[in-house]
Image (cartoon, rainbow, N blue to C red; front, side, top):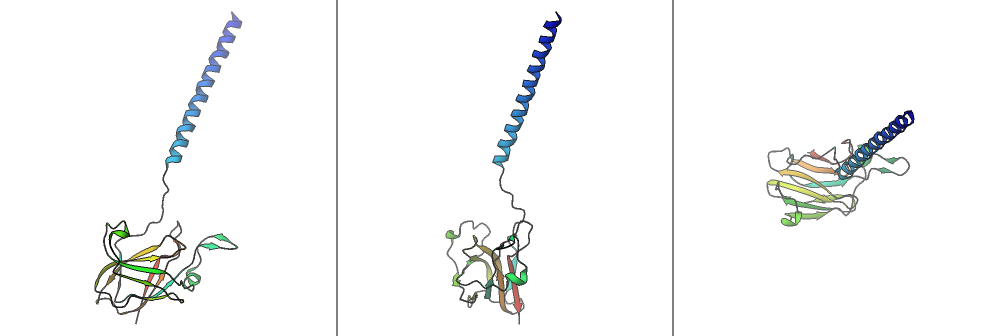
Length: 180
């Protein structure tokens, strides 16, 4: 009888151990499936609808990637980034539209390309709200919402830093207007 009770206890313990293992296996499988379905989170997103006010659109495009050859990945200080001019960068000016997801939906108002020193000039641009798209091959591109008006202090030039923004919101994406 004792042998039967011992055998029964071992069988019951073996079944509960198997049940526990199966439950753990299910939990691991479900957790793994959820992790594989998770979307990439962008911790630093850029604000749409903030308009940089200028009287003219001319200036320089500067910036660099965030990879230091000897130190690895990380943002360069702004005084380094803003000394590197970007040549042959295409800038497109579109009429502002909140729902414009595909840029092929509307033709650009004007398009310019930077010279060897990163300089550009859109010439005369009518007063209004625009989206300035900078197409730099090192990254997917950058955009700024711009308002051209006569109320702002007269703009002598702008400096646009197209360096990538790090997840901790450090780095580039700067639009700096310079007044006379």
